[in-house]
Image 1 (cartoon, one colour):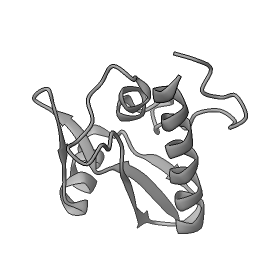
Image 2 (image 1 turned 180 degrees about the horizontal axis):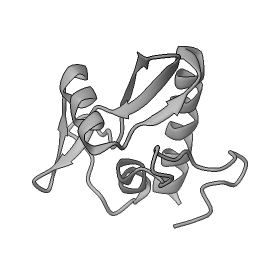
Image 3 (image 1 turned 135 degrees about the vertical axis):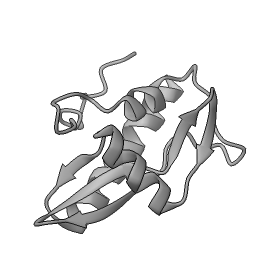
Image 4 (image 1 turned 30 degrees about the vertical axis):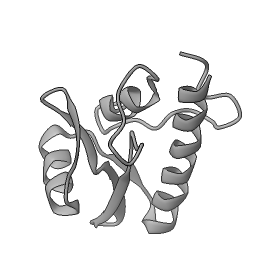
Length: 108
C-alpha cells in the first residue's frame, strides 16, 4: 500500500486509536467492489456534541454488502469502528477526503 497520508494528512482513527478495518479494506485494491463498483460508502449521525462517521458498505461473509443507515449505525456502535468528528460538515469533509484516498490507493 502506498503512503495514504500523502497530501491528505493522517488517516482517521476509531475511539480505540486504530485505523478502522473498513477503511483499510477499502484502500486495498485486491478487495472486491459492489455491483455498483463501490468499495466504501459512509454515513454520519450525531451523538452528543459529536458526529460519527461509519461505513454503510461492509464485508460480510466474504462479500461486500450495502446496509441501511440504521443497520450500519448499529453495527458500527457494536464494533466501535466509527470515527468521531465535530459536526456534520466535518463528517462530510472527512468522507470526501477518505473517498479520494481510497480512489488513489485502488488506482495505484
